Image 1 (cartoon, rainbow, N blue to C red):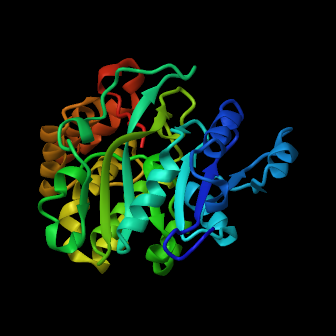
Image 2 (image 1 turned 180 degrees about the horizontal axis):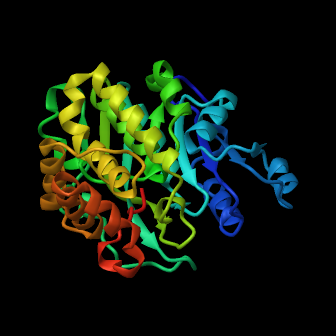
Length: 333
């Protein structure tokens, strides 16, 4: 039975407009080795679905709300959740059968643990394995690492937080974010970035698990892989990150690469005016040095233009479709 030493888990599965993978995603959350007495599943989406009643009969909470913001959907689902531990799942991703058992075990082992992140495997649109590597773990993490007080080890974990994470590989203790729920409600896309930033300035622990317990689907319909995402999403992210760094200056050096990337994107796209700073440029250079992939290469290219020739950067960005190698893209978060 449920006890204080075995926290109840809530899985929050989010979907927006897309039905194609939803059934498979829900089933992966239901077909766990962990007994169902220890967890609940909440699905929050913006559409009625022919399978809603079927899953309600299986004990799944279905919330239908017209809300495009990912953070706001998670916020609303949190209000309906019973779990002490919250774990997220995007509608196109999947859990391995043992993931929730590992999450429960991890939070039970470390009472001060606030944020958990596991390694992932990539699958294609049809669910077939891809050979794409997750550089975040392939190059820097060969074992599970627990950091009991991130405030004392910010320098040593920069390599971890400079990489991109995935919502579907995250789990967090609900109480840890209670004071910052307003930030979550205003976060359109990058919940992973927000949660890590909050954890890094907390007195709680972070666990990096090198086990592959999540399947991330690489597909054309992914929100974070779609070029031309509504600029208010990116502006919202920038405002949240800026607010957090003003509140916790120790955080600035850690999230500066993310802030720089957003500023460079927004200036290049013409959504905000002005030049980036030299610090922004060196932040993008650091990201490129650590992870020389397409995203960091493009960001570095645009950072140079934004620093010296911002008007040219806008022209190049405007014509990016005929310059595919220079297109700023976002990797799957």
